[in-house]
Length: 252
Ligand code: ATP
Ligand code: MG
Image (tube, rainbow, N blue to C red; front, side, top):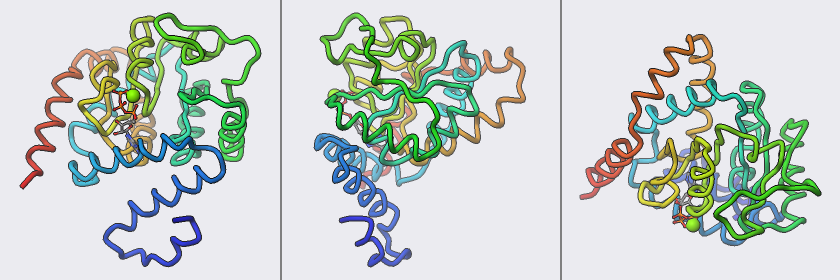
């Protein structure tokens, strides 16, 4: 389905929101922003979204608030973007980076120069001025085979806090063992990324990022001591267990 076909779906269709996202994902595949595996990743996400009733749960809100606190306390926050993120929420990512004074870096699992350029264009069209990820002198983080270890010198390499939606498990692990605080958005509470990250937001990226922007606006007014209290009061494993219980509770 393409964006054009979407006009044929009435907005009161019960699957309208979900179909709208599918259309964006398919378009992104066609324009080279998304790898074929990105289509599959989206489908896996849809299945888990069903299980949480396609809405942001109280547990996800807690994780979002904690992620906002980490981002506001960070010395050098970086937002890492892949094809799915660029396809679904480019404007929101640029807005969030602006509020946090965070760098944006493109990091791809299936890296090609063509896809990198396509994503960079999407982000620039969405208002980004400066996008990292395509430098001639990248660095490598330890614990990964190249080219998956590739990071930007002024981006993830330097970051103390990385927001990295839909990351791969190996790379999330490597970021954590390189001393980064890793904030992820992943609808699957059982993935290695979900289990390894510092904060896992079990929610659809399209809802999570919008909530994250509002949380940053709200928490910006707080003292650092209050932000530290939020961070210290959060237990990722407990939150993931709660997400799983929530999903089980929705089963017949
Ligand atoms: P891991 O490598 O962490 O063990 P995986 O290999 O099972 O995970 P991947 O294909 O690497 O999964 O990553 C895709 C992940 O992104 C899936 O867990 C999927 O649920 C999640 N996902 C897909 N689309 C969205 C979305 N729109 N919002 C949030 N999460 C999503
Ligand atoms: Mg994986």
